Image (cartoon, rainbow, N blue to C red; front, top):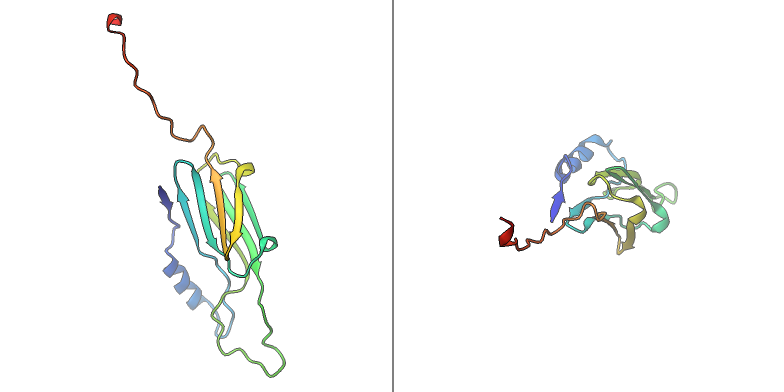
Amino acid sequence: MTTVMEQFPPWLRDVNRLFGQESGAVAGFVPPADVLIDDEGVHVYMDVPGLGRGDVEIELDSDVLTVRGERAFPYSTEGEGRAAQRIERGFGRFERSLRVPRGLDPETVEAALRDGVLQLRIPKPASQQPKKIEIRELDPAAH
C-alpha cells in the first residue's frame, strides 16, 4: 500500500493558519485527509465533522480529486449579551484538492459519510491493476 503525502505537513499548515488569522477571527475549516493507494485502487478518508451529505461536493478531474463544502458557523456571538471568548474550531467554505493516479474513472467513485468521516473509494481500472504473469513450461524439443 502506498500513502500519498501532501507537499506540506499538517503541523506546518496549522502554524500558518495560526499566524495568518486576525486576533479574535474565526479560523477557516481545512479538513485533514488521508490518501491510501493499493493494488485495488485509491482510498480517501477526510474528517468533516458536523457535515451531512448535502454539505459536500466531490469531483474527479484527471488526476485531481477535489472535495468542496461548507462547515457553517453553528451559533451567533451577536446579541443576547454574548461575546466570543475563544473559538478554536474552524468554520466556513473549504476546498481540498488531492493528487491521485491518472486514469481513474469518475463514474466509479464510491462515497460514504460515516461518523464525521468522508470515505471515498476509487477502484483502479483493470488496465492499471497488476497482472500476474504465469511461467509456462517450455517444450524441450523446441530448442
